[in-house]
Length: 248
Image (cartoon, rainbow, N blue to C red):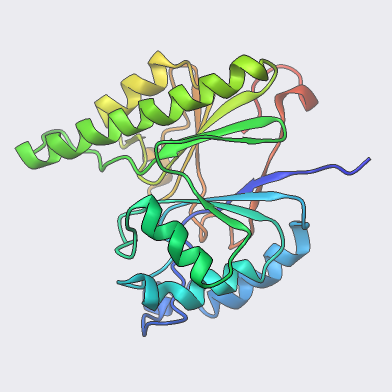
């Protein structure tokens, strides 16, 4: 029997079509694209799925990001990509899918107001928004929109779960829902409302360990930015393979 796995890794910050070296953020980013490829090939197989919650490419337009998408296409597995704060190339789903078709890319899909069934899991999520004690009116508008998008994705996930009740709904965000004792209240309220057991997020690169939130009510949180994972996709283990606490 073929065992199919689901992985996650965020913030790849690829720049095959732009001049944006990441080593300016520290030696750990030296040759990071090569390290991502090497580590990816060591764990991901052709039938596996890798979720990438935002900040895939530094490209400002899809044309600038084409090399990064082709880099991913050449790697094994299916890839599900959601939007990050640096993904300026992001467009409407219609335009994004046309972009993939123009490059003959078959292994990449987008997570945006939808959900996917992947083995033991139902994949849901959105970008989210940054956390702060106060928001401007524009921030309020954005966070309300992101909360609604998360609900749309989770509602699509619930439709899948009706047919597959044994599957676990997982949530993927780009921004952290909580950090340093502060919550993005609208996003966290959705996680609580839908009783999400596990949420994976990226965005953070320089973190204070004591400020990381690992639990939000009954939701376990995990930071999966690429540099946090040493540029190796993280295997998400099904609940049924563990006893006691939900695995992260």
